[in-house]
Image (cartoon, rainbow, N blue to C red; front, side, top):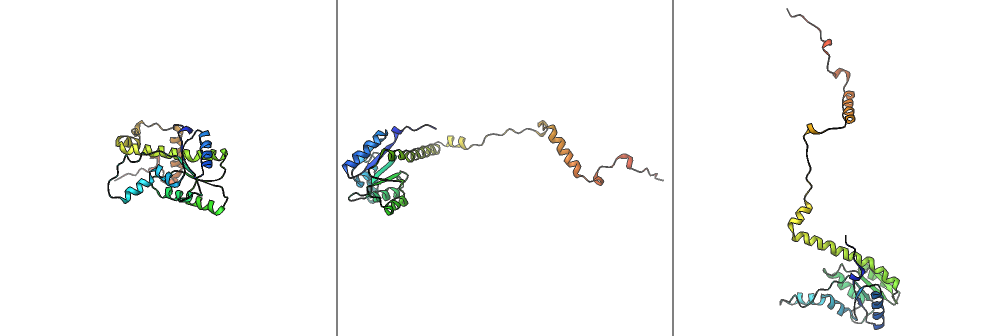
Length: 221
């Protein structure tokens, strides 16, 4: 299995505060992550292509596939309190999407409200950070991104197998087993002797084969 470098991880940061957005962007880049920062939940959905997917589902006219360029995102970190669409609303939209629900989502907030934290975790958030976010918090993101990267890798392999029936058949084909005739098999001597001994011990004395000396000679007139 190939080792995935941290520089390959892409994080989408969402925060309406310019100061907080620059802080989280600097911390992520310090950890060698690729960062895309936006200032609202709607812009985050637009970047992910979710808004265009919803509009195309409502519009019966065909939509060009080149309208949105698919960008791989390994993790989304968003502020909770934002005007318009909150971080919780953004979390729900992502988890309701069949194409985005596997992306880990981390919520940030300057208020330590247990009910808010539990609400986000129950909805599917992977972490909940209190502001200001520290470098130690950013280090907690790596396991979530590794999980997503490995899952995408496995799904890509499964897709390749489905597209190549010959490769899938060879992967599922059972190895051939060489069979030998019973006469060519050589069993250990102790195994044969033990098996013979157990059979002889299981026979009662009256069931043993009689010897020729036990027969009585009878003259027939």
